[in-house]
Length: 313
Image (cartoon, rainbow, N blue to C red; front, side):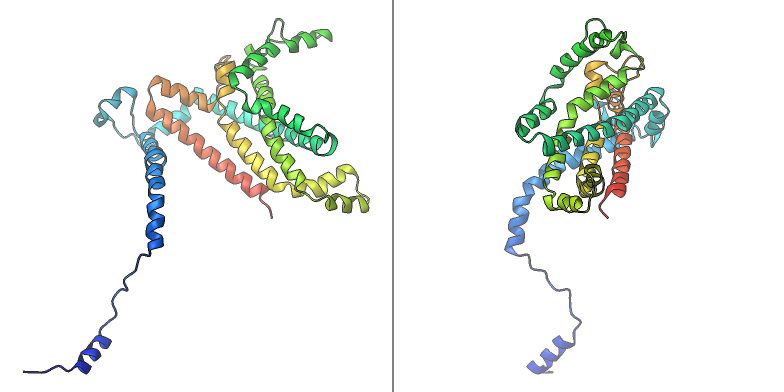
């Protein structure tokens, strides 16, 4: 019988290949995961789950009647996307949305920046009152705003046509005209939304030290030169934030045409969000979700371009 000594046993253990070290889970990690677990479950149940579910629906021919018989749903690949892009109403909605964004976003930012500069430099005494007044439309119900703008844009006894009549101009039927309906909605959207961007611009302006302008004055720069070459570059992060948030909001514009024109006249104010909403109403869930994801991709691409163009170098 062979006797193995203790020294030989230790030598065998040292010569054996090392195994994978066992990772110890700290009490802090267990406590952190325990606290985060409710949020993770809620995120999976109410955010990630529905998003992935709707993405899957966009590749099927699911309709409202299939909700009771889900096994009858068939996959159609990119068929819904091709159908959406080929639909005349959707293309018109995409054009109207682009029209609304290209005109509305720059106009909103310019008006917001001008109001912020006016409050920061010119009207400091009643600044709080003006800030509340300009921001009030942002938090006002769209229904109440629609009542006001219908009074302003009414063709018969509206405020705008009455003022135009004083100078001999016969105003059109603003909301019933294919030419003027969209500009009317843009004006309404700018009036309603510029207060939000103005508050952010005002915070950005107040964060710029006075020494910057004082240095410009010492160098002999005028008011416009100081604003153009000193203040505006320092506002670049603020401009980026407001342009991104305003652009995303305007790409999804829905309330203004839904309340004021119902997309008319002759689909001249229908938006992508309205076209998507209509397809949901018709029970074409697969087609509607594909339209929603097309809009999502467009928003992601435009936001990426904005970051590339306006990010701080």
